[in-house]
Length: 284
Image 1: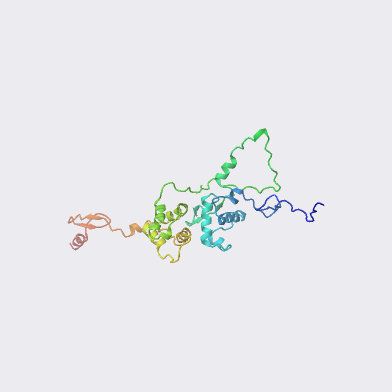
Image 2: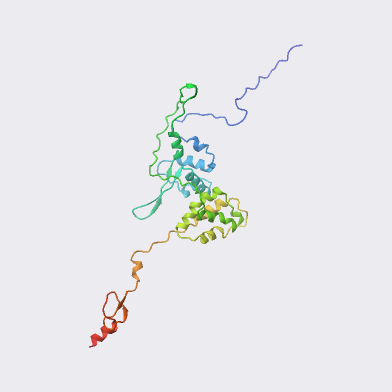
């Protein structure tokens, strides 16, 4: 008997049976360096990761407000606002407010390509290589762009509150008014700053609860946190105007004085005689 001959060549063995295969080519212009701490962030949503990548690629001074971003993308204002808050919570974005000389208040936008926690981790000393071998860094095919200076005065992102606050209690208690408004603890922490802003503007908690629970749709609420975030952002009342300093004294009555002639009390800016005594003296 003769051995069987194979006519078809064997299939080449692939290094990976499944999963992604990368075809990488170097970029020499029109590119943005994004760290894996952002691209593979375990807690950020895909919307937040994509939005952070887009913001880091924009030129300095480009507006990144909710309406400006919603005009570019199809996600809509609610999802974009939620993604911006995620980036603030994890240190990739800061939006401090500053008062201008004209008295107006504007919001600045500061993008961090590496959060403070990642900066501190990168500044830590490297571990000694094992077996006494010197560590050889991999060469960079493309020189990285100059790092963006991080302002020293930029505020740290606010940590999640350890103790319940009035705003957090209000959010957690919304489910007593409507079971569909049951929030996860993470959503309560994320929405607490927005409710605190309402409280700081003098809105009573009962009014905030009514604004968040009245007029709800009859259909099942799939994303209660997104619904509440939209209402807190779009229905935020303005600050209570401060009356001028002279307004408090404009209608203040004159102080009581004792008449020098009849000892009767009367109102006048300075001591003296009442109107009757002044009239009698003029007739005499």
